Length: 314
Picture (tube, rainbow, N blue to C red):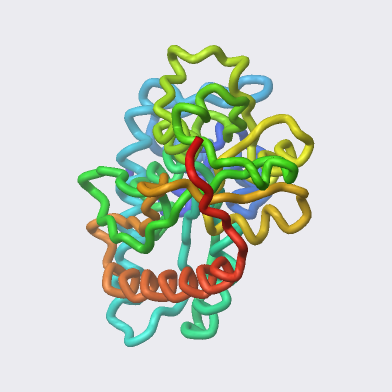
C-alpha cells in the first residue's frame, strides 16, 4: 500500500463519519464524483472493499470498521505535527477548532470570540456546537482542538481545566413573582420543563430535584431542544424550568416570566475546557482559557444588574 495519500485517508474518514457520499463530499469541499473516485482508488490500493453501498447510505464493511480507528490515529498524528510547529511560535495563528455545549454557546461565545480575535490577529476560529458526548468523541478523534463543557468529563486521555461555576435559577410565569421559591421536594410535584435527553444540563436539573427519570412518569416532564423554548413555554403558562444564570439576560428579555434564586446551597454547574493530553497546543490552550474567564466575568457583570429574587423556600 505504497500509493495511499493523506487526501484519500481524509476522504475515507469523512465518508465513514457521515455514512453518505453527498454529505461527506460537502464536508470535504469536493464534488461527489471526485469523492467516489478517491474512495474507489483507495479500496483498489488496499485490495478489499471498505464500504457497503446502499441506495441511501453507505456502511463500513467489517474490515472498514477495523480500518477506521487506525486511519483516525494517522490523521490525528499528522494534525498534531502541524500543531507542534504552531506551538513553537510566540502567538497562536491558524485554525482553532472549538467545541461548545448548547447551554453555553449562545451566551459566552459573542464576548469570547470577540476577545479572542482581538488578542490573536492570525487566528482562524471554527466553532462546533453540540452535546457533550459528541464533543468528547470529536476531541478524541482529533477533529476538535478543545471543547467547553460541563465538568467533570473524567476521560483519562483529556486534560480538564475549570473555567467558572454558575448557579441555576428558577423561571416561573410572571404572576408567580411574589410567591415563595419552591425547594427540590416541591419542584418534583410541579410540571417541570426540561431539555431533551442528551443534554447534561437536563441531568443536572434532575439531580437537584432528586428525580429518577427511570421511575418518574414521563407525563410529568416536557422536553425541549433549547433553553429559549423552555422559557417561552414558561411564558405560555405550561410549567416552570431551571436555566443557568448566564442565560438569563438573553432568554428572559422578551418573555413575561419571573426569575428567582434558590436558597443556599444553590444548584450549580462547573464549566471547563478540555483537550487531549497529547495536544502540542496545550500551553496556548491554557492562555485561551484565561480569555474565556475574562469573557465570563464580562457576562457576570451584566448579570449582576438583573433583579434576581432570593425568596424563602416553601
